[in-house]
Length: 414
Image 1 (cartoon, rainbow, N blue to C red):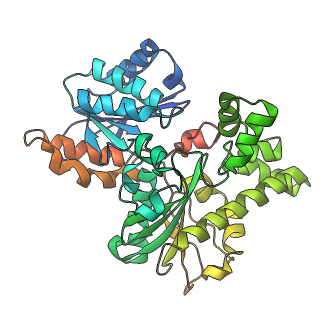
Image 2 (cartoon, rainbow, N blue to C red; image 1 turned 30 degrees about the vertical axis):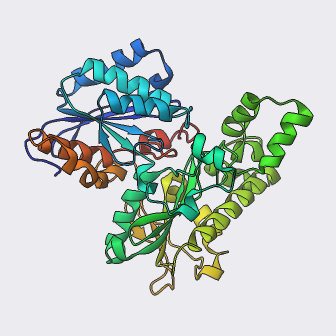
Image 3 (cartoon, helix red, strand yellow; image 1 turned 180 degrees about the horizontal axis):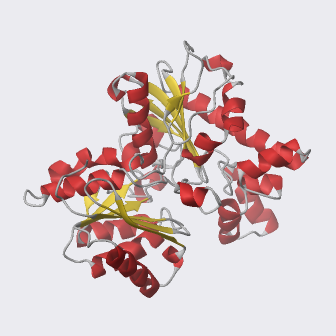
Protein backbone atom coordinates (compact mmCIF):
# COMPACT_ATOMS: atom_id res chain seq x y z
CA UNK A 1 0.00 0.00 0.00
CA UNK A 2 1.27 3.46 -0.73
CA UNK A 3 -0.95 5.41 1.64
CA UNK A 4 -4.08 4.34 3.47
CA UNK A 5 -6.88 6.84 3.14
CA UNK A 6 -4.99 9.16 0.79
CA UNK A 7 -7.37 8.98 -2.13
CA UNK A 8 -7.02 8.43 -5.88
CA UNK A 9 -3.91 9.48 -7.77
CA UNK A 10 -3.76 10.17 -11.51
CA UNK A 11 -0.54 9.19 -13.29
CA UNK A 12 0.13 10.84 -16.66
CA UNK A 13 2.66 9.39 -19.11
CA UNK A 14 2.77 11.47 -22.28
CA UNK A 15 5.25 10.21 -24.84
CA UNK A 16 6.30 11.53 -28.22
CA UNK A 17 3.24 10.02 -29.90
CA UNK A 18 1.09 8.53 -27.17
CA UNK A 19 -0.70 9.33 -23.93
CA UNK A 20 -1.27 6.90 -21.06
CA UNK A 21 -3.47 7.89 -18.13
CA UNK A 22 -4.11 5.75 -15.05
CA UNK A 23 -6.05 6.50 -11.87
CA UNK A 24 -5.09 4.41 -8.82
CA UNK A 25 -6.65 4.15 -5.40
CA UNK A 26 -4.64 3.89 -2.19
CA UNK A 27 -4.62 0.08 -2.50
CA UNK A 28 -2.95 0.28 -5.92
CA UNK A 29 -6.15 -0.78 -7.65
CA UNK A 30 -6.64 0.70 -11.12
CA UNK A 31 -9.82 2.76 -11.09
CA UNK A 32 -9.57 3.99 -14.67
CA UNK A 33 -7.09 3.69 -17.51
CA UNK A 34 -6.86 5.15 -20.99
CA UNK A 35 -4.28 4.93 -23.79
CA UNK A 36 -4.39 7.28 -26.74
CA UNK A 37 -2.41 9.14 -29.36
CA UNK A 38 -3.88 12.33 -27.93
CA UNK A 39 -0.53 13.62 -26.68
CA UNK A 40 0.07 15.04 -30.14
CA UNK A 41 -3.43 16.40 -30.51
CA UNK A 42 -4.51 20.00 -29.90
CA UNK A 43 -4.81 20.97 -26.24
CA UNK A 44 -8.63 20.96 -26.38
CA UNK A 45 -8.57 17.25 -27.25
CA UNK A 46 -6.13 16.57 -24.41
CA UNK A 47 -8.42 18.40 -21.97
CA UNK A 48 -11.38 16.35 -23.12
CA UNK A 49 -9.40 13.13 -22.72
CA UNK A 50 -8.28 14.10 -19.22
CA UNK A 51 -11.79 15.10 -18.24
CA UNK A 52 -13.12 11.73 -19.40
CA UNK A 53 -10.74 9.69 -17.27
CA UNK A 54 -11.25 11.92 -14.22
CA UNK A 55 -15.01 11.47 -14.55
CA UNK A 56 -14.61 7.73 -15.13
CA UNK A 57 -12.66 7.23 -11.90
CA UNK A 58 -12.82 9.07 -8.60
CA UNK A 59 -11.51 12.66 -8.59
CA UNK A 60 -7.73 12.48 -7.98
CA UNK A 61 -6.13 14.12 -4.96
CA UNK A 62 -2.84 14.48 -6.84
CA UNK A 63 -1.40 14.09 -10.33
CA UNK A 64 2.01 12.74 -11.30
CA UNK A 65 3.59 13.50 -14.68
CA UNK A 66 6.42 11.54 -16.24
CA UNK A 67 8.79 14.01 -17.95
CA UNK A 68 11.69 12.65 -19.98
CA UNK A 69 14.08 15.57 -19.53
CA UNK A 70 14.58 18.00 -16.65
CA UNK A 71 17.54 19.80 -18.17
CA UNK A 72 20.42 21.11 -16.09
CA UNK A 73 18.16 22.96 -13.63
CA UNK A 74 15.86 20.17 -12.37
CA UNK A 75 17.80 17.47 -10.58
CA UNK A 76 15.05 15.94 -8.44
CA UNK A 77 11.39 14.96 -8.76
CA UNK A 78 9.51 18.11 -7.90
CA UNK A 79 6.14 19.74 -7.25
CA UNK A 80 5.14 21.83 -10.25
CA UNK A 81 4.53 25.53 -9.75
CA UNK A 82 4.88 28.34 -12.28
CA UNK A 83 8.62 28.56 -11.70
CA UNK A 84 9.15 24.84 -12.25
CA UNK A 85 6.90 25.00 -15.30
CA UNK A 86 9.14 27.72 -16.78
CA UNK A 87 12.22 25.59 -16.18
CA UNK A 88 10.55 22.66 -17.93
CA UNK A 89 10.00 24.93 -20.93
CA UNK A 90 13.73 25.55 -21.06
CA UNK A 91 14.36 21.81 -20.97
CA UNK A 92 11.93 21.14 -23.82
CA UNK A 93 14.46 22.13 -26.46
CA UNK A 94 16.75 19.32 -25.24
CA UNK A 95 14.15 16.62 -25.97
CA UNK A 96 11.82 18.13 -28.58
CA UNK A 97 10.14 14.82 -29.39
CA UNK A 98 9.24 14.00 -25.80
CA UNK A 99 8.95 17.03 -23.55
CA UNK A 100 6.59 19.35 -25.50
CA UNK A 101 3.79 16.72 -25.66
CA UNK A 102 4.20 16.09 -21.94
CA UNK A 103 3.99 19.81 -21.21
CA UNK A 104 0.82 20.10 -23.30
CA UNK A 105 -0.78 17.51 -21.06
CA UNK A 106 0.70 19.05 -17.89
CA UNK A 107 -0.79 22.43 -18.74
CA UNK A 108 -4.18 20.93 -19.52
CA UNK A 109 -4.16 18.91 -16.29
CA UNK A 110 -3.18 21.92 -14.16
CA UNK A 111 -5.95 23.96 -15.76
CA UNK A 112 -8.51 21.19 -15.25
CA UNK A 113 -7.35 20.38 -11.69
CA UNK A 114 -5.81 23.57 -10.28
CA UNK A 115 -6.34 22.68 -6.62
CA UNK A 116 -4.44 19.38 -6.51
CA UNK A 117 -0.65 18.99 -6.44
CA UNK A 118 1.07 18.11 -9.70
CA UNK A 119 4.47 16.41 -9.58
CA UNK A 120 7.09 16.17 -12.33
CA UNK A 121 8.94 12.85 -12.16
CA UNK A 122 11.98 13.16 -14.38
CA UNK A 123 13.85 10.41 -16.21
CA UNK A 124 17.08 12.38 -15.96
CA UNK A 125 17.09 12.50 -12.15
CA UNK A 126 18.64 9.04 -11.75
CA UNK A 127 21.71 10.26 -13.62
CA UNK A 128 21.95 13.67 -11.92
CA UNK A 129 25.10 12.68 -10.02
CA UNK A 130 27.06 11.34 -12.99
CA UNK A 131 30.77 11.90 -12.39
CA UNK A 132 32.38 14.55 -14.55
CA UNK A 133 34.34 11.98 -16.56
CA UNK A 134 31.08 10.36 -17.68
CA UNK A 135 29.12 13.59 -17.97
CA UNK A 136 31.33 15.87 -20.06
CA UNK A 137 31.89 15.86 -23.82
CA UNK A 138 35.38 16.69 -25.10
CA UNK A 139 34.17 19.75 -27.00
CA UNK A 140 35.05 23.46 -26.76
CA UNK A 141 34.40 25.07 -23.38
CA UNK A 142 32.00 27.57 -24.94
CA UNK A 143 29.74 24.74 -26.10
CA UNK A 144 29.68 23.26 -22.63
CA UNK A 145 29.39 26.48 -20.65
CA UNK A 146 27.22 28.67 -22.90
CA UNK A 147 25.05 26.02 -24.57
CA UNK A 148 24.95 23.46 -21.74
CA UNK A 149 26.25 20.64 -23.93
CA UNK A 150 26.71 17.64 -21.64
CA UNK A 151 25.51 14.08 -21.15
CA UNK A 152 22.24 13.72 -19.21
CA UNK A 153 21.15 10.10 -19.56
CA UNK A 154 17.58 8.81 -19.71
CA UNK A 155 15.38 5.83 -18.70
CA UNK A 156 16.00 6.86 -15.11
CA UNK A 157 12.64 5.76 -13.71
CA UNK A 158 13.11 2.35 -15.28
CA UNK A 159 16.64 2.02 -13.88
CA UNK A 160 15.54 3.02 -10.40
CA UNK A 161 12.86 0.33 -10.40
CA UNK A 162 15.11 -2.35 -11.90
CA UNK A 163 17.79 -1.61 -9.28
CA UNK A 164 15.39 -2.12 -6.39
CA UNK A 165 14.00 -5.34 -7.84
CA UNK A 166 17.42 -6.76 -8.68
CA UNK A 167 18.69 -6.00 -5.18
CA UNK A 168 15.80 -7.96 -3.67
CA UNK A 169 16.46 -10.95 -5.95
CA UNK A 170 20.19 -10.91 -5.26
CA UNK A 171 19.70 -10.53 -1.51
CA UNK A 172 21.99 -7.54 -1.30
CA UNK A 173 21.30 -3.87 -0.55
CA UNK A 174 21.23 -1.72 -3.68
CA UNK A 175 23.86 0.52 -2.05
CA UNK A 176 26.35 -2.35 -2.16
CA UNK A 177 25.81 -3.54 -5.73
CA UNK A 178 27.80 -2.95 -8.91
CA UNK A 179 25.42 -3.63 -11.81
CA UNK A 180 24.98 -3.06 -15.49
CA UNK A 181 21.32 -2.55 -16.36
CA UNK A 182 20.23 -2.80 -20.00
CA UNK A 183 16.94 -1.12 -20.82
CA UNK A 184 15.95 -2.56 -24.20
CA UNK A 185 12.68 -1.41 -25.73
CA UNK A 186 11.60 1.06 -28.40
CA UNK A 187 14.40 3.18 -26.93
CA UNK A 188 17.50 1.36 -25.71
CA UNK A 189 20.27 2.24 -23.29
CA UNK A 190 22.58 0.71 -20.71
CA UNK A 191 23.65 2.08 -17.35
CA UNK A 192 26.47 1.39 -14.90
CA UNK A 193 25.24 1.43 -11.30
CA UNK A 194 27.81 1.60 -8.54
CA UNK A 195 26.65 1.46 -4.92
CA UNK A 196 23.12 2.48 -5.91
CA UNK A 197 24.11 5.41 -8.14
CA UNK A 198 24.38 5.86 -11.89
CA UNK A 199 28.03 6.37 -12.82
CA UNK A 200 27.74 6.04 -16.60
CA UNK A 201 25.09 5.51 -19.25
CA UNK A 202 24.98 5.16 -23.02
CA UNK A 203 22.42 7.90 -23.77
CA UNK A 204 23.77 11.43 -23.63
CA UNK A 205 22.58 14.93 -24.47
CA UNK A 206 19.50 13.44 -26.15
CA UNK A 207 17.86 9.98 -26.24
CA UNK A 208 19.43 9.49 -29.68
CA UNK A 209 22.95 8.66 -28.47
CA UNK A 210 24.13 5.15 -27.68
CA UNK A 211 22.68 1.78 -28.62
CA UNK A 212 20.83 0.93 -31.83
CA UNK A 213 17.09 1.24 -31.21
CA UNK A 214 13.82 0.32 -32.89
CA UNK A 215 13.74 3.31 -35.25
CA UNK A 216 16.53 5.48 -33.82
CA UNK A 217 20.08 5.13 -35.06
CA UNK A 218 21.99 5.33 -31.80
CA UNK A 219 25.49 6.82 -32.01
CA UNK A 220 26.71 7.84 -35.46
CA UNK A 221 30.06 9.42 -36.33
CA UNK A 222 29.45 13.21 -36.17
CA UNK A 223 31.77 13.58 -39.16
CA UNK A 224 29.36 11.51 -41.23
CA UNK A 225 26.55 13.90 -40.37
CA UNK A 226 28.49 17.04 -41.28
CA UNK A 227 29.53 15.27 -44.50
CA UNK A 228 25.88 14.61 -45.37
CA UNK A 229 25.13 18.29 -44.79
CA UNK A 230 28.08 19.70 -46.73
CA UNK A 231 28.33 17.20 -49.58
CA UNK A 232 24.75 16.05 -50.06
CA UNK A 233 22.80 19.12 -48.90
CA UNK A 234 20.78 17.34 -46.24
CA UNK A 235 19.33 19.85 -43.82
CA UNK A 236 19.56 19.50 -40.04
CA UNK A 237 15.82 18.83 -39.96
CA UNK A 238 16.17 16.08 -42.57
CA UNK A 239 18.98 14.41 -40.64
CA UNK A 240 17.13 14.72 -37.33
CA UNK A 241 13.99 13.18 -38.79
CA UNK A 242 15.81 10.29 -40.47
CA UNK A 243 17.91 9.43 -37.39
CA UNK A 244 14.96 9.55 -35.01
CA UNK A 245 12.20 7.98 -37.09
CA UNK A 246 13.60 5.95 -39.98
CA UNK A 247 16.81 4.41 -38.67
CA UNK A 248 17.70 1.64 -36.24
CA UNK A 249 16.20 -1.82 -36.70
CA UNK A 250 13.69 -0.44 -39.18
CA UNK A 251 16.38 0.92 -41.49
CA UNK A 252 18.61 -2.14 -41.27
CA UNK A 253 15.84 -4.65 -41.90
CA UNK A 254 13.77 -2.60 -44.32
CA UNK A 255 10.64 -4.25 -42.95
CA UNK A 256 10.13 -3.87 -39.20
CA UNK A 257 11.42 -2.19 -36.04
CA UNK A 258 10.12 -5.03 -33.85
CA UNK A 259 12.57 -7.73 -32.76
CA UNK A 260 9.77 -10.29 -32.64
CA UNK A 261 9.13 -9.83 -36.37
CA UNK A 262 12.85 -9.89 -37.09
CA UNK A 263 13.47 -13.13 -35.20
CA UNK A 264 10.72 -14.78 -37.23
CA UNK A 265 12.01 -13.32 -40.49
CA UNK A 266 15.58 -14.40 -39.75
CA UNK A 267 14.38 -17.95 -39.16
CA UNK A 268 12.69 -17.80 -42.56
CA UNK A 269 15.97 -16.85 -44.23
CA UNK A 270 15.68 -13.06 -44.39
CA UNK A 271 19.28 -11.81 -44.54
CA UNK A 272 18.43 -8.18 -43.75
CA UNK A 273 16.53 -9.23 -40.65
CA UNK A 274 19.55 -11.26 -39.58
CA UNK A 275 21.82 -8.26 -40.15
CA UNK A 276 19.53 -6.00 -38.12
CA UNK A 277 19.60 -8.39 -35.16
CA UNK A 278 23.36 -8.86 -35.45
CA UNK A 279 23.98 -5.11 -35.40
CA UNK A 280 21.51 -4.63 -32.55
CA UNK A 281 23.01 -7.31 -30.30
CA UNK A 282 26.57 -6.22 -31.18
CA UNK A 283 25.81 -2.71 -30.01
CA UNK A 284 24.15 -4.08 -26.87
CA UNK A 285 27.26 -6.08 -26.03
CA UNK A 286 29.52 -3.14 -26.74
CA UNK A 287 27.40 -0.84 -24.57
CA UNK A 288 27.24 -3.32 -21.70
CA UNK A 289 31.00 -3.88 -21.80
CA UNK A 290 31.60 -0.13 -21.82
CA UNK A 291 29.39 0.31 -18.77
CA UNK A 292 31.24 -2.47 -16.94
CA UNK A 293 34.43 -0.42 -17.34
CA UNK A 294 33.02 2.04 -14.75
CA UNK A 295 32.62 -0.68 -12.11
CA UNK A 296 35.07 -2.47 -9.83
CA UNK A 297 33.26 -5.74 -10.43
CA UNK A 298 30.09 -6.99 -12.11
CA UNK A 299 27.63 -8.37 -9.57
CA UNK A 300 24.88 -8.95 -12.15
CA UNK A 301 23.60 -7.99 -15.58
CA UNK A 302 19.98 -6.83 -15.46
CA UNK A 303 17.65 -6.76 -18.49
CA UNK A 304 14.52 -4.62 -18.49
CA UNK A 305 12.28 -2.97 -21.09
CA UNK A 306 9.96 -4.88 -23.38
CA UNK A 307 12.74 -6.41 -25.50
CA UNK A 308 14.83 -7.14 -22.43
CA UNK A 309 11.87 -8.86 -20.83
CA UNK A 310 10.20 -10.58 -23.78
CA UNK A 311 12.92 -11.47 -26.28
CA UNK A 312 14.96 -14.50 -25.10
CA UNK A 313 16.91 -14.65 -28.37
CA UNK A 314 18.32 -11.18 -27.76
CA UNK A 315 19.31 -11.95 -24.17
CA UNK A 316 20.98 -15.20 -25.24
CA UNK A 317 22.93 -13.61 -28.10
CA UNK A 318 24.11 -10.80 -25.84
CA UNK A 319 25.22 -12.96 -22.91
CA UNK A 320 26.71 -15.89 -24.81
CA UNK A 321 29.23 -13.55 -26.45
CA UNK A 322 30.21 -11.61 -23.34
CA UNK A 323 32.30 -14.34 -21.80
CA UNK A 324 35.08 -11.79 -21.19
CA UNK A 325 32.82 -10.34 -18.48
CA UNK A 326 32.07 -13.75 -16.95
CA UNK A 327 28.66 -14.05 -18.63
CA UNK A 328 27.37 -17.21 -20.27
CA UNK A 329 24.49 -18.33 -22.43
CA UNK A 330 22.07 -21.13 -21.63
CA UNK A 331 19.63 -18.72 -19.99
CA UNK A 332 16.19 -19.78 -18.81
CA UNK A 333 13.01 -18.12 -20.02
CA UNK A 334 11.53 -16.27 -17.05
CA UNK A 335 7.97 -16.56 -15.82
CA UNK A 336 5.95 -13.86 -17.54
CA UNK A 337 5.61 -10.76 -15.43
CA UNK A 338 7.97 -11.90 -12.67
CA UNK A 339 11.45 -10.59 -11.83
CA UNK A 340 13.81 -13.56 -11.93
CA UNK A 341 17.42 -14.66 -12.05
CA UNK A 342 17.59 -16.55 -15.35
CA UNK A 343 21.22 -17.69 -15.34
CA UNK A 344 22.19 -21.11 -14.07
CA UNK A 345 22.70 -21.54 -10.30
CA UNK A 346 26.19 -20.56 -9.25
CA UNK A 347 26.81 -18.39 -12.31
CA UNK A 348 29.86 -16.16 -11.95
CA UNK A 349 27.72 -13.20 -13.05
CA UNK A 350 23.98 -13.67 -12.51
CA UNK A 351 21.63 -12.50 -15.26
CA UNK A 352 18.40 -10.92 -14.03
CA UNK A 353 15.20 -9.99 -15.86
CA UNK A 354 13.02 -7.28 -14.33
CA UNK A 355 9.71 -6.73 -16.11
CA UNK A 356 8.15 -3.32 -16.20
CA UNK A 357 4.74 -2.07 -17.15
CA UNK A 358 2.46 -3.48 -14.47
CA UNK A 359 0.99 -0.79 -12.27
CA UNK A 360 2.07 -2.38 -8.98
CA UNK A 361 5.59 -3.02 -10.15
CA UNK A 362 6.79 -0.36 -12.43
CA UNK A 363 9.58 2.12 -12.19
CA UNK A 364 8.60 4.99 -10.11
CA UNK A 365 7.51 3.99 -6.69
CA UNK A 366 11.16 4.32 -5.73
CA UNK A 367 11.38 8.07 -6.36
CA UNK A 368 9.02 9.21 -3.72
CA UNK A 369 11.66 9.26 -1.01
CA UNK A 370 13.61 11.77 -3.10
CA UNK A 371 10.88 14.35 -2.75
CA UNK A 372 8.63 13.57 0.21
CA UNK A 373 10.80 15.64 2.52
CA UNK A 374 10.36 18.63 0.20
CA UNK A 375 6.59 18.70 0.46
CA UNK A 376 4.73 21.20 2.61
CA UNK A 377 3.81 19.64 5.93
CA UNK A 378 0.04 19.66 5.49
CA UNK A 379 -0.21 17.76 2.19
CA UNK A 380 2.81 15.56 2.89
CA UNK A 381 0.87 12.29 3.00
CA UNK A 382 -0.74 13.14 -0.32
CA UNK A 383 2.69 14.00 -1.72
CA UNK A 384 4.10 10.68 -0.53
CA UNK A 385 1.22 8.81 -2.10
CA UNK A 386 1.61 10.66 -5.38
CA UNK A 387 5.33 10.17 -5.73
CA UNK A 388 5.03 6.53 -4.78
CA UNK A 389 2.34 5.94 -7.34
CA UNK A 390 4.09 7.99 -10.01
CA UNK A 391 7.29 6.09 -9.65
CA UNK A 392 5.38 2.87 -9.55
CA UNK A 393 3.41 3.32 -12.70
CA UNK A 394 5.51 4.99 -15.34
CA UNK A 395 5.84 2.00 -17.65
CA UNK A 396 8.33 3.57 -20.00
CA UNK A 397 11.53 5.39 -19.80
CA UNK A 398 11.93 6.70 -23.31
CA UNK A 399 11.32 3.11 -24.40
CA UNK A 400 8.52 1.19 -22.78
CA UNK A 401 4.84 0.69 -23.31
CA UNK A 402 2.30 -0.87 -20.99
CA UNK A 403 1.80 -4.55 -21.73
CA UNK A 404 -1.60 -3.90 -23.34
CA UNK A 405 0.08 -1.61 -25.89
CA UNK A 406 3.36 -3.49 -26.07
CA UNK A 407 1.73 -6.72 -27.20
CA UNK A 408 0.52 -4.95 -30.32
CA UNK A 409 3.23 -2.53 -31.34
CA UNK A 410 6.61 -1.41 -30.02
CA UNK A 411 7.04 1.35 -32.53
CA UNK A 412 5.24 3.96 -30.43
CA UNK A 413 7.47 3.52 -27.38
CA UNK A 414 9.90 6.26 -26.51
